[in-house]
Structure formats: C-alpha cells, structure tokens
Amino acid sequence: MRNWILIILFFWGTLARANGRKNEDILNKAEKLMLADPKESFELAKKAYNSNMLNHQDKLQALFILTNTSNLLQNPLDVVRYGNDALKIADNKNDVVTKIKILGILGNTYQFLQLNEKTRIYLDQAELLLSSPKISDSLNLVKGNIFYLKGMNYFYSLDSDIAFSYFNKAINQYVNSKNPLAEINIKLAYLNRAYALIQQKKLNEASESLKLASINPNESSRPYPPQFIELQESFIALGQANILSLEGKPGPSNEILFDILEKRKNAPSRDDIENEVFKLLSENFLQLNDIKKHDHYEQIFLMNVEQSNRDAAKWVNKLILQENSQNEEEKKYTDQKYITIISLTSVLLGSIIIFLLVKLNKINKKRSLLKNKVSENI
Image (cartoon, rainbow, N blue to C red):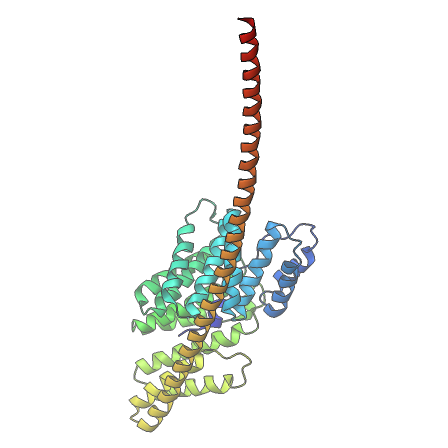
C-alpha cells in the first residue's frame, strides 16, 4: 500500500510567524492555507519568495511552505528543489527543528518515488537529530511524524515487525502532544499499525487498531482536512476486507471492496487504494474458484502496477535531469566565484608585491646614500 495522500495530509504545523515585515501578511496567509488549500498556499509563498525582499528567517519560512505544499500537491520535483534550498538555510541558521521537518518531507517524497535507500538516508538523519538538545519534550508532534514515516518505510520494505514498533513509538508521541494536528496523526498511525498487524496475521489486534483509527469529527478540536475523512474510512474498510479474506470469508470481503469502488468512482483525487482493491478482489475470486474474475482483476492490478512503476521512473528521470541542471548551475557559480577570488587575490598580491618593491627600492636608495656619506667622511 502506497497511500500517498494518507502520508502527506498530516504534515507539520508551521514555523514562527514573520514579525511586522513586508511579506508578513502573505506568509501568514500561506501558512494558514497549507492544509485547506495547498495550491493557493504554494502560490502565495512563491510570490513572497520571488520578491527577493526576505531576510533569512522569512526565506526559510517561505521555503518550508513551498516544500510542504509541493508535497501535498504531489509534485516531487518541487519538493526536492525547495526542500534542499531550505536545508541549506536551516544548516546555516542551525535550525534543527526545521531541518528535521524538511528531512521528513524529503524522505516521504523519495518513498513516493520508490527510492527506498534514499528514503532511509533522509529519515535516519532526521531520527538522529531527534536526540539534539534543541528538540524539547514539547515537540512530540515532530518526533511522532518521523517515527511514523520510519514505520511506513519499513512497512513498504515488508518488515512489519520493525514497522509495528515505529508506529507504536509514533502513537506514544502523539498521545503526549498538545498540537491539534496530533489528533489526525494518531488516526493514521493506528491505521497503518493495523496493516502491519494484518501482515503478521494478528487479525484480532488489527481489528482493534482499525477501530481506533476510525473518525469522529465531533471529538476533534479542529476540522479535519477535506479529503482525509473519506480516504481514512476507505482504508479502514479495505483493512476490514483484508481481515475477512484472511479469515476465509471472500464473499463478505468482496462486498466491502465493491462498496469502496462505488463510493470512490467520482472521487476528485484518486489514490493507490483502488489498486489494492483490485489485488484483493483477484485473491478473493481465486478463493472462490472463479478463475475468470480472478484473471480479470489480477490483470487490472498488474497493469496499474506497471503504470505506477513507469510513472515513478519518469519522475526519477526528471529528478535526475533537475539535479544535473542544478549541479551545472552550482558548478558555474563556484567556477565564477573561484575566478573572482583568484582575480582579487592576484590584484591584492600584485599590489603587495609592488608596495614591497617600492619600499625595498627606497631602502636601497637610503642605504646607498648612507654608504656614500660614510665614504666621504673616511
């Protein structure tokens, strides 16, 4: 399950507000719109960023918004571009908290691109930074998010035991968090913990986790993001269908699966959930010895997997081209910087040499004059 939207909707809260500066209103508005309207948030942050009138803190704030909303809008090229720029500023300012957040978003993006090794590298860096003295106990949301993403990474790698342990770590952090976003995050952690338990065939525990993942908007202190409830309910239903299938009840499982497809046929944003439904349908019809329908849904599933892999490969190729282009620009900038430094150094050394030569010439003249006077007095 590569439930992209379920990973990205819960991200991260905001940075510190701008204080009385020219782009304050734009950046504050962009922050407030990150979850509700990521496209508008992105455009506002881009407008502020392109104004070239930002100090380092405002620039970092704008880059964080651009990175986060690009993640929400499923544009990995922009995530990588703005994220790496944000990392440079966060490093220079020694802003550990923002660095952890950006590393998490980048790790999530590389997971989407199916680059598991890169994912692990970024998330390991983020987890290592969690032990920094600058990460206070009050930042439970940030810690929980990193543990959650680490759990997803191991889940994709089919290591459900480690994934389960990280989902538990994430849940413990969210329980202790006072950030309202933790109310959303904990639902996601329970959901994916349930899927890890399903992989382990621990079906009763998985059912309990699915119940804990269910949504009751009346219990929340803030509105849930627009697409979150629908997707969460669909993935909970899919989990229940998985459990029924493993219990040898393919008929009831199929009823749930067809209901998911019916409810989502007009969904404005589709997700890999449909492909998981087709996969389970094929398995269920195999249990029912209906080979024709098994072959039908398996073919749809395999076609979608192939298309998904092609799409991921296209993104990776675009990313490589983008990184090569950025490397060329940085090389040109570095070369130009070195040329400038060498030129300035040459001018400076030349000036020093001329100064020393002039001074040495004066000293020699004084010596010669002194020597002549001494000779005259002998």
